[in-house]
Amino acid sequence: MQTEQTIQVPVPRAGALGLAYLNDYYRADVRSVEIQQVRSGALGCQRLTPTRLPTNPRNTYVPQSDLLVLLDPDPVPYNLCRAGTLRVRMKGTVAGGEAPAVRVVQGGRQLAMWRAAVTPTTYTVQAQGGEVTLSMTNPYAKQTADRNLRITGLRWQPQTSP
Image (tube, rainbow, N blue to C red):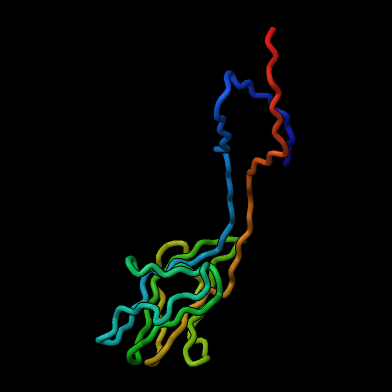
């Protein structure tokens, strides 16, 4: 709802005058998945990190905390040194009434499709050695609220002395 108002503000003396808007507000409904750990059951390469950082700026990998956050479907690759169990610990944020779906692909073949729970949960799948990619397949974002100030004009009217 937009409301236009004219506001008069008395300025007691000449000098610099600042104008600040300190009441901005923004809210969105965004589906995301936080992948907190990617591990392999194969000896010698248990802790896996992405072999290539996400190319989409909406997907982020933070190496200090081994955290991958996915908002878009671009695949993120990992390399398994040999065949074994792939374990992925993740949690999702439901948006648009749906949990994020994470696809696991190796060699062009889908190995698994998981719906990320809202609490951290570990998912497993058997994989061969080589590159495996993880991607979120159902991105969703909708702005639900925004509060902006639009100033359409300023007018200075000198005050006349009585």
